[in-house]
Image 1 (cartoon, each protein chain N blue to C red):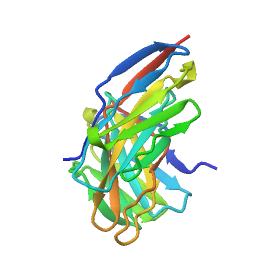
Image 2 (cartoon, rainbow over the protein chains, first blue to last red; image 1 turned 120 degrees about the horizontal axis):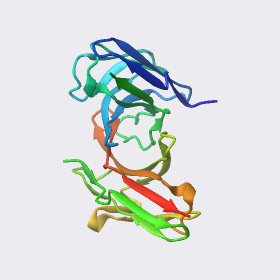
Image 3 (spheres, each protein chain N blue to C red; image 1 turned 30 degrees about the vertical axis):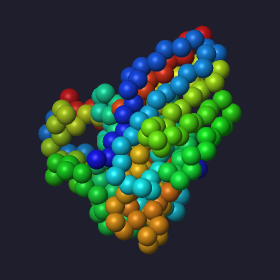
Length: 118
Length: 117
């Protein structure tokens, strides 16, 4: 009963290829995120979607295109992969706050996808 | 600006020692949330605790305890009687809110804790 799942867990590919990472959550959350963890372990937000709508785009190169077919899924497609894209990509989900209420819920993370670009 | 600083890059202790991981934050918000996550060698991110800015009570959960002090903008994490299984990278994070009820997490750089037998 995995709460947030990602596929694949490992992805090794050549520079210039296009690849996708999939994420699914069964927690009933309405907001999903992609975070990138680089080789120095720095974790940084990339995108956030709420009910299929893009909410956050943190100046990520447009080679990265998230897609949310429904609120339980958020996929990440990467075109023309570069060496610098090598990282661990984490999907996460949470509840959005209601009205003026600030969201207090923690974000639940998937197991991560280790992408290696050769 | 929203920022989280974990000044300790690596800490090495011997089993059964107590260890404190420091976290200092900066925020423009009066209402905010702070989090600690654990990343063991297997790589997943495990949620440990959430604390809101209005609750300065210290929290204890087994061997783990957290000290939140608004006056010094710190949210430190102490492991008592450390064990080898505590070896991991620990991240402190701050919620960064947007209008519409959305937020993202701002993470510190992490502290790698190595507990030796």
